[in-house]
Each structure stands twice: as C-alpha cells, then as structure tokens.
Image (tube, rainbow, N blue to C red; front, top):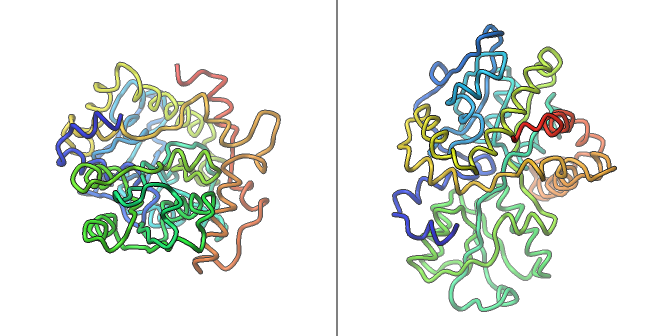
Length: 361
C-alpha cells in the first residue's frame, strides 16, 4: 500500500490528509451539504436520517451509502448528510438536535461527550487513524528518541496514540511531545529541523518520507495493537435509536456492507458514484478512500467485547478509559469517566445483528 502511494503525485496525496479527520481538531469541509446530498428509499422516506460527516476526498461509509442507491434503498428513511469540521463540533451539533447520527469521530471528542453525559450510543467502529511516526536519518532505533522531541496535532487522537506508544517504549518523560495547531505545522517544524520526529497523517508522512529522508517507525494501526487504539466511530442519539431501532439497524448493516465493498472488486465504481456527492474527482476519491484502514467485518465485534466477555472488557471501553485519563491530564475534563459511564454509551447489539445477517456479504 505504501509503495503504491509513494508513486502518486503530491496533489493526490494531499487529498489523503482527511483519512482520520474525525480524530483531529479540525477536518475538511467544502460547501454545505445540509440541503444537498440526500438519498431516499421507496418506503419510510418521511423518516429523516441526518448524518454529520467529514466532507472530503476520502469517502466514508455514510457517503458510500448515500451515493449508491442499492445501498441507500435498504434504509427506510431519507439520508441527509451535514458537513462538520471536527468531532467536537459534530457531537455538539448532535447534542443540539442537528442530526441523530455522526460518523468518523475519534476517541477524544467521544470520551469528552461521555464525560458530559451526552445521550448517545457508539454503535460501529469504522476505521483507525492513518497516522505515522516519521523520524530523521539520525534516529536509528526507538531508544534514540530519548532526549528528543516529537511533534503532533495537539489534543487529538494522534496525541493520545503517540503518547501511548512512547509509554510502551519506556520513553515517557524522556521524549518530549510538542503539540501543534495543524498537521501542516508539524510537517513544517520537521522540515525546519525544529523537531526530531513527526506523528502526522498520511499525506504529510508520505511527503516527509519522499522529500526529507524521513523513515516510518510505527503506524496508528500498529499502536492500536499495543493497546492504544483510536477508532473513528459511528454514533447515534438515544432518542433516535429508541424511536427508529429498525432504521439504526439498517444503517449499521449498510455501513458494514459499504466498508466491505470499499475493499472489493467493485470499490472503484461505488467510490466514484459517492464522490459526486462531495464534488471530489473520482480518481482522487478512490486513491484516498483505499488508504483508510477500515475495521473489517470479521474484527468488528471484537472491538466491543471479546468472545464471552462484556462491554467493560472490550477494547473500545479500555481505550476510552485511557483516553479519559489523557483528557484529564490535559485539563480538558475534570474527571475520568467510570467504566459504567463508558459502557452505558456503547451498544454492540447492532453489530451483533449485522454479523448474524451477514451484512458484509
């Protein structure tokens, strides 16, 4: 995958910046789609299925659904996509009633919402961040980062991830983590030799590898396996789920189906259709979307709970507890949500049913 991307032009690579937009403090947003991208099924079209989403060249599952009638028609309602600029903003709008679903939001904004007792449920783990740690040629081994500085996007899921990875390397307190206001600022600091490592999204990582002799050390997916996963998720309000449980189930099923399609032989066609909703050139949308590290249908339920386990034992709950401590350390929440608070905001039943229904097939 990385070799393919290295052959792309930087213009296409720039479109990949948004692969984990839900986790950062800001995302990509074009013209408002509040009255734009919609799709309705033959039945139940009076039910408004509003979804807060990140409008960009990267095509998330919600856009794949809305942009392909064979997927959208399986949902008894009218899909209405509403662009958001950040996970925090999206959850604030969801809380205010702007839409019942929000897609692609990462750990920090979700855990912040849980701490504020927002009435929502996390119902699907969509994809990991696409971030990578890039270091200069003088860093030969992980231990060489002791006494050095790593830059990242301040307060983001990436910040949570890289600090977790450093703790696993025994580098907490030895490697300084400096937060920047944007991915571009981190990249610029690395190029100017003001920092020794940059934990950045895919577009910046590729540029630093190709043009600045950077070396990839670890990816967000690899960090996730070490116990510090940052998942971009689909969430729904309690009120909508109570009133339209069937629609929520249909949406989860089609999300699983759409993500499976994005990794299959029909991916280009489906992504191309969906790209029209966000005004992105189809070739850029295909390249950007294929980079997203989607959670596979096979692994989906395991993120909520292990076989025979409970939500409290699941990887999402554990990651959210770690994220809560991260947010408290940063002064962004006054207390870490309890495991009971966290699990009360998780609902694995929709995934369980989607697996039974073979929605990925």
